[in-house]
Image (cartoon, rainbow over all chains, first blue to last red):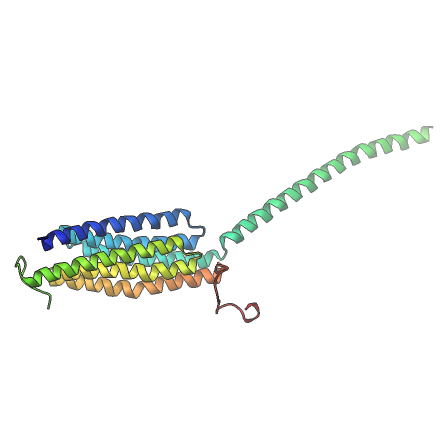
Length: 143
Length: 123
């Protein structure tokens, strides 16, 4: 007959394995996550999974001081998410906005550079032409 | 009442251990479902729907498993306090994040059916 204790041990091991899997999947979303709020959400989820880990380890080892750590981690995770949400609000633009701004700035810089080069060319040409004109005009009276 | 003297082998003890194991497995399954939702769903708001409901449910179930497994009343009450705290803070934080993201202009996915916060002329 299978003892209750061995069922419990296997359940603890299975819970640890499932939690590890979900930890890895969440980390994939954090690394991949196309926008900042996706990553913040991933961190929030990571805190939840870490609380689960702490509880399972607390059950496995019987070292129940870990419950306090779990509560403190929950508090820190909540405050971090709130602070990140305020940061998203304060930044006030999405990744698309930032990309569009960068492209706009790049095209502005290109246009400015082209205008400056044209201006320089015109100035060079103008510098040569007045010389020619002056010499021509100064040459004319003599002629 | 689930409080019993430590180390005493009774049918009650077996039942409590089995229930605790079941809560552990169900809680970790909820965490896995939440992370798969985080991976598969198309945009921030639907991902938030997975992470803040199933994820909270998963860690709360595991804290409850700890609460019913332990023999110490102090640990049990702290675990239950953690459950209450987590249930209170998770909706607040994800609501704040969703509101900030929507206000800043992160758009819903194109397959979203309705956007009730959109201005009337854009619906």
